[in-house]
Length: 67
Length: 337
Image (cartoon, rainbow over all chains, first blue to last red; front, side, top):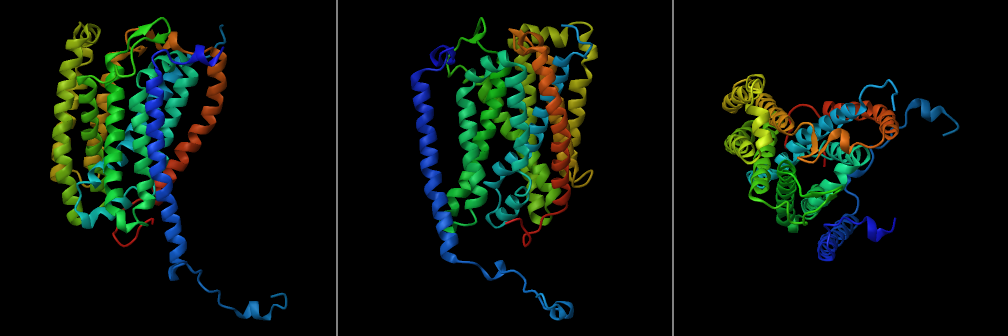
């Protein structure tokens, strides 16, 4: 079956064009906004609360020569 | 083909029916919280969002289950219904994009917080309206010629579908208010009760209007409800709805504890859902095709059922687990973000 034979009969070219434009508008808004979010996260750098809790050397670790 | 299996069409109808109801209940309350978010006091907004942040995305699983099962098991219904509701489905998807990213962007971009605040509220409201309009268009039925949808892409837009769209906004708002009552305390909780009251009034008005409108506009639906002996057998549905409406009203006063608003909202939804199912049964394309006429081959149904029966318990298990992990009251100082 060809694509032209399987398309929904109710769907006109204008419908498809309109929905494509709607998708384009939404994505043109979302991608710059997403890039701005990521750029901000990078610019701010890691926050103090993001750092892992320091590991305290215990007696067992200190006596282990493989450390 | 006689295989000795139970009627799989009924099994699949139950799976899709229950799956769609789960969707309406679960995504319903988080879309409702999204709508209420736009009206909540500005200082409480992050708590409102945190009340659904850990659990909202899993709720859309059920929409995908319902949509794909409709495509695979009832392809004829899919081919007629989906083109007919092309634009509301498009509207719903685009609105869900705004709503979904608002969770992530709002906290990162305080300089345009207002934009994402309205994106969250308006996105939730439009997605809800679109779902309600799809339901309204479905109940009214579609223009069908042979095995195709014969109308235009804008046939869905009628006074009735606008009514059901607005009705669902009130309905999801009620579920959302019920969820907030369950998850919050103090001033925000009293605010949620007040918002729930407004939504409940809207829901009850919508139930009455739809219950009068559908039998008047469709003789088959009138026959289904009012012919003897159905009028007696089906009487419990409207009676229970009235009892549930009263219980919901009392629950908003504080009766029954913090879970009662959500529970009675759930009750109103399940009764309305049953009412629609009773009106339309056994048609899956109203007035044209029954579930048996629209079903795919039995081999396809068996094949799909095997996979689904493995997956469903897994979905139910992880969904239940995530709700369990994030149980209890939400506090302003401890969030998911």
